Amino acid sequence: MSTPSYSRRSKDELARRVAQDIHDGAYVNLGIGQPTLVANHVPADREVILHSENGILGMGPAPAAGDEDYDLINAGKQPVTLRPGGVFFHHADSFAMMRGGHLDICVLGAFQVSATGDLANWSTGEPGAIPAVGGAMDLAIGAKQTWVMMDLLTKQGASKVVERCSYPLTAIGCVKRIYSDLATLACTPQGLQLIDLVPGLSHAELERLVGLPIAAAA
Image 1 (cartoon, helix red, strand yellow):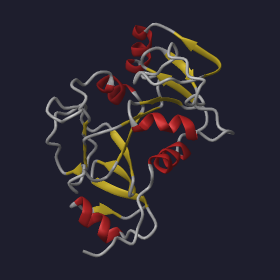
Image 2 (tube, helix red, strand yellow):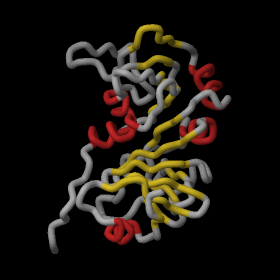
Image 3 (tube, one colour):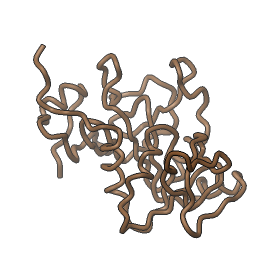
Image 4 (spheres, one colour):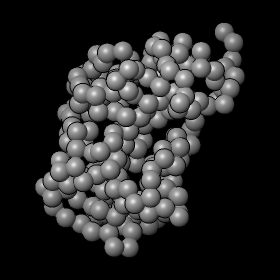
């Protein structure tokens, strides 16, 4: 088997790629897992207000080693920091923000995303899986844009971007963009559209890996 001529984005490179597309002044929720890394890569000259569903607005990046305060955590129980002006509140108020359409973007992980933007990010049968949908349903429907951040392929080499999800759905047609370790894709009513590729990966090879047609970048 020939060695691929391309390199995958590392988790931090992927987080940086997501952060570069978040607009100034955006209110953003970062889901449990890989999406939390985005907080560490928001450009210093851009004001992005990070929200956590356990009741934080104005969340900052991860603390330096030794500076962790485990009374200040995100929804995934990871220690975080608070930016000047940041606030705490009851999680019921936090969910009201999510359900009320007050978030511009949410960034979630996923097991599968369909070409038209259906999201499946929970399962009771996957080892180590999130056993219930949790707040992801509220975020996926309530945010103005839902972005997914994930590896493009499973450990077995199957595409996580599929024609139709086989995992239980979190929400239908909610995902606008897929940020992966190999490519960035837009989900449209007509199917997938390419935004960018890692260097060395061709459009044709990406389509072979995904197993679906992908329209050229606009």
